[in-house]
Amino acid sequence: NQRIPRYDELPLSPFGGRHSWDLAECKGVGALGLITDADRLAVMARDAGGALRMLSGNEVGLLLGHFLMSHAVVSKPLVVSTIVSSAQLGAMARSLGVRHEETLTGLKWIANRAIALSSEGYSLVLGFEEALGYCVGTVVADKDGISAALVVGDLAAWCHSRGQTLLTYLEEIQRDHGLYLSQQFNATLPGAAGAQAIASLMDSLRRTALKQIGAKKVSARNDFLRRERMISDDVRPLE
Image 1: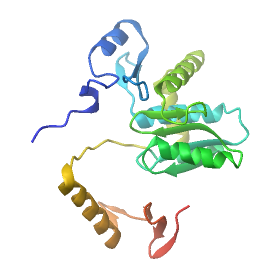
Image 2: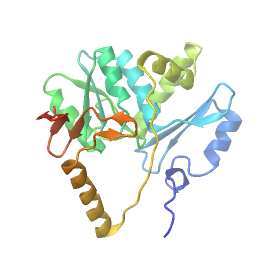
Image 3: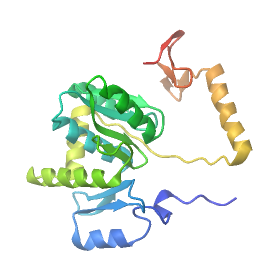
């Protein structure tokens, strides 16, 4: 059994080595990192004590989302996230009067949904997934670290003009729209046996609905395969 390396240990990771950390420690207020093909973006920023902190994909997505929704220049802005990403983008969008859509995992689903809704006059301002994938605007219909890095730079400059940092802006967003917590967990189930185990688990969850998780009662379930939303025993189409 071989341990699977974390994403920040991989050669293609934006911060796979110490060089970016050392450079930022010496010269910068933070750092941006792109993997080899530049489709993913990682962001580091300094906290109040001056130490660097890596932002999660959800945190970067929320920063970009709030900034772009608050400064949208289109009449019908749209933000899209996936089922594995923070639910806070949707809550924030509803508060700001912006349409939010949720798709299956993968930026292709975000792009497809944005293209479909463009016929109704909606313009994508941000699509994101927590695994450091961001689609900013409509220039690139896929995850693109370069355009996202440009907007993060613009955001950082805007924060600086207000006497803020990325982290204090994130706190402002959380105070206004609530604190959402998330943490990654990786479970590797290799080969055909692993695929069968996953299918069996999903089938079991569909046949035997969870009523409670810990001390929390389950209020609703979304089944993206069947496109159903279940609230108690009431089943309705998943919009």
